[in-house]
Image (cartoon, rainbow, N blue to C red; front, side, top):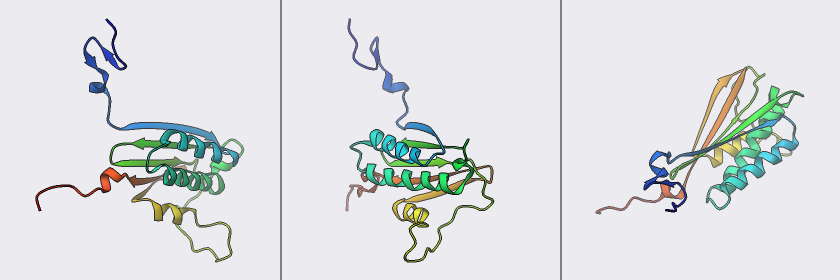
Length: 156
């Protein structure tokens, strides 16, 4: 008897699988790895409605990790994690630390070419969380999916 994908003897594997899917990628702390993290995110989320915003967030947070932390040192790394549910796309970037203060948005000069990354992430994300310390921080941005944002039907 032939079984379909994720089936074994009449039992569907989805009974044992979480409704949340998660992926992780660790990159060397070189600037060219930011592009790899961006492509990886785009490939995973491909046709998802939040794919473009998530890819931009990965780009900005990875750039911050490489530029402002020990992740950008010759032996540094940064880690990108994606978690996807029906309601939320969560994007986390973990750096190697090296900075005593918590990341915060700044007000760059109008002509400045840097300094807007965290502000862009804050504008795109429905929620932003920062955990860790000078030994390593994780910045997590959450995007609500169209399913989560859809008005709930009901008697009115």
